[in-house]
Length: 91
Image (cartoon, rainbow, N blue to C red; front, side):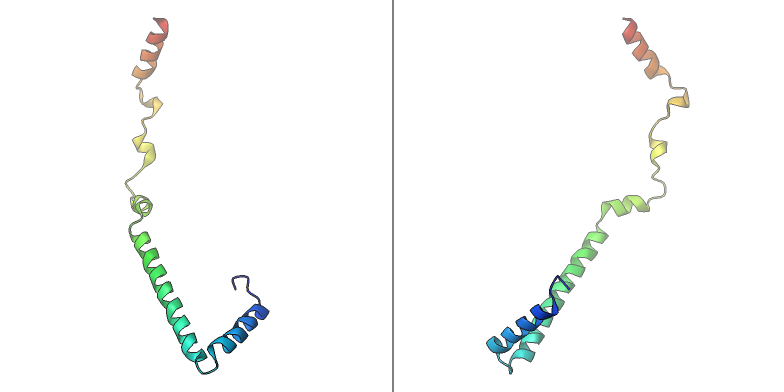
């Protein structure tokens, strides 16, 4: 858990016991729990928002988007490019 061992957790709890006092520890634990719950809710909301507005996901969902069809093939009989290059070399 975040690189914290059982001894470190015990030391933090003992310091909290001395600083906060035994009467206020349950209230402090509830406050810390609410804080982490709120942070987790905000993080989940941000993740959901990013997932909803992800342009790559939209492209992956499109079945009609086919890259090989967009790139012309050299074997299509379109030799104009090759002929124009050879004419430039001759000149």
